[in-house]
Length: 404
Image 1 (cartoon, rainbow, N blue to C red):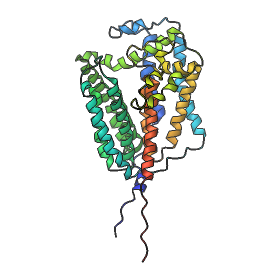
Image 2: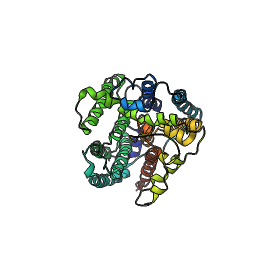
Image 3: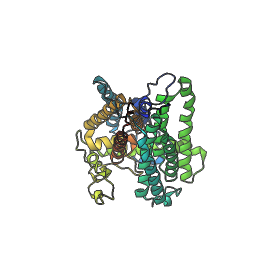
């Protein structure tokens, strides 16, 4: 009699791996985000490039090469990758973290219709913001749920794909639909983060070898250019000569908060993380806690002196504003420690999915989104893995056939 394949064994084994293993890790993605959001703006400002650029003439209002606060900013930015690496190194000194032993099984497919219904509801609610340009009346309360759902489906896709579950194909199509919706509403960074996670997973776990990885590097050039063109289109601009502006406007405008924080001199060496702690309240849905907006404290509500005219907040401002100059460095070291612990526990589909999910946050969200967004996205990932494990444990055990 033929036997049905054991899905638990398949989910533990993960995808078929060929070629040489990759050492790509969270350290590399942190370095990419640090270069894009800190190194490039600091070099441009310190060397006086804003004064000679018509496209970035706005930046000249917030910094000049002769400002006295440059040593403090440069020192802090230079120490960030150092402490992040030291945190990762400290995690390696500890015994290997236990893997998330519970394998994913078919009962997790119950989440598929839930994702489909949620995408339909949130997409319908946000229909007024689709392809409407960067309008001032964009309703973030309906765009936000689509972004949250995007990250949930991303983690689910990575986990089911690694476990070789049939539902991964349908989750993948839902992820494509939500990506199209987000691009139409200006949520390009969420889509880009999802692409980073999928590419990181492929490069690290399933690429056939060095040649395949090397050939794929052309995509790393094409994707940023594509997203820059999308940004131009969203603003109604079709001048290819301005492509460089749209390619670097994101990190440069994000750095305004760091420049103005340093010029304001209102930061401390050690501070109370009120904004960071209140970000945990933001996880509670507004339908359950309608008055949470009166409890959540953001950095703009504190006496801290900085400007963020385009919404994005530099990691320099987020960490120093919450923990202080020295405390911010300790926090980044802790992030490196946690990332390494998750990496060392990524021996199962759930662990590999969570690691890739967290890694995709490093190049973009970690360096430019406020903690209210970051905490929500990170905790969503851990909670979703926990839900998948519960569903896997809920699978009834088969009874061995009784003997004659």
